[in-house]
Amino acid sequence: MQILLRLLRPHLRVLVLGLVLGLISNAANLAAPLATKRIIDTLGTGDALTGPITLLLVLVVIGAVIGLWQWILMGTLAEQVVLDARLSVIQRYFRARLAELTGRPTGELVTRVTADPGLLHQASSSIVGLVNASLAFIATLVLMGTLDIVLLLCTLTAVILVGAIMAVLLPTISKSQKLAQDAVGELGGGLEGTLRAMRTVKASRAEARQGSRIEADARRAAAYNVRAARRAAWVWTVSWSGVSLAIIAVLGVGAWRADAGLLEVSSLIAFLLYAFQLMGPIGELTQNVTALQSGIAAARRISEVYAMVPETSDPRPGVQVPDAPVLAVRDVTLRYADDSRPALDGVTLTIPSRGHTAIVGPSGAGKTSLFSLLLRFLDPQSGDLYLHGRPYRELSPDEIRSELAYVEQEAPVVPGTIRDNLLFSRPDATEAELHAVLERVHLADKVASLPEGLDTQLSGAELSGGERQRIALARALVRTPAVLLLDEATAQVDALTEAALQDSVRERARSSAVVTIAHRLSTVVEADRIIVLDNGRVRAVGTHEALLESDDLYRGLVEALRIAVPVPR
Image (cartoon, rainbow, N blue to C red; front, top):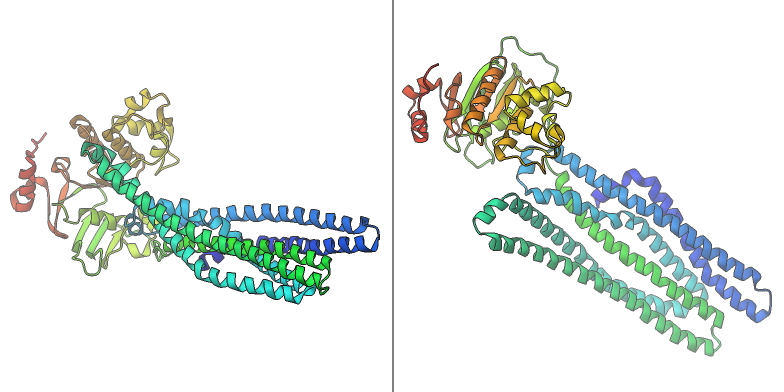
């Protein structure tokens, strides 16, 4: 409820206007039965009917116009609240720590932006609707009481019975909606992951098995939605049936009282009109409470996004330390959980401002964890990192990443055109710079052969995995960062292209730092120095030749991969 109220707070004026319009519309509708009574009474006296009929028509027109205005106003407000909710979730995604996002299925994160805020559409105006319906309900009962107390008591008895049943059923709607949305999130996560791995699914002949799992998630979501629909159906049926039975009882008792001379026929007709009109506030109350329950369920899921830990920093003024290495790691320890073994344990190393540094080691040695620290995707439990001699804790994530360019192992491309991808990390790059970097990664001819060249959409472009990886590398090379971080950037390219890319690495290393994570050592045998990680610790540091002679682990890695020592040129 707090999340919903937070989203509604910026629109308080619109809510108040909607409330006022609703009160005016309800007042016009409430006056209509009394105007009808006046017409009937006028028939008995023989007076002119022009005035009462005109009054009734004016009330109907006013009620319709004001009601239309309120409907449009609250509908617009509902869409704005949904938009605000989506924008707030998106903003929190981009401000959240990377671990908060990577620890959840992508499809579920998408559902929090698409499906969940949609449930706030009706809930956003439900508060105004509840107030209007409650006041209309009370006013209707008061006016019914002015006509006949006995009939009012009959009506109240039915209302109390209906209210008691609804009080039991309504809370179950919110619970069912929450479970349904959770199931939809799991469905989205499973489907998104399966679609990504569809080549593997088909190659493994696992279409039926994996399809059955996704279908089971869909059926579970449907079951929860059916349960919520049944609860809502019971609420609506009880409310409308209760009012209908009340009207029948009022008609019977009222007819008896009118026949006994205890009630005027015009008063009975007006009372019946109010009884029928009472179905409006009761139905509106039911609808708004149901919408509010659904909205609360959605807001509860959105609140989980709000609870994501954002990237924080305490930036302080400072200057680069002269002659300091571009990056330094001092006695750093990193754990992914308090009770887990360290991913990095007391790591100390430096990255010179120029040259090519390679980081190698067996799987699980801590190579990717080290990159995560350098990019400040994670913060260590102990120890310090330095950029140009300044502690990371005194720098914002933006300041740190402005000095780094990063190419992931999977080298993902972002949605958009080839040009969009190349400009992603440096929007002001010129056309000449883009073509130059494509030449360096041997993609200039390929891009030139595409119908729309640089403006070709990557989603429809016929590019191989290696070509997409080269686009990701070009995206990093178009910048001139202090440090270029490569996570096995040549994993999916042929030998000739790899040699050309190594030339690009050597060229960049002459003027800045290049740090390479290598899963195959052929990419780093010419590095200026190699850092060997093992079990989260720095095991050895040296050149390829020196490590071959001095370190058993490094020698074993080289021998396992059957990499020959390069012949000096």
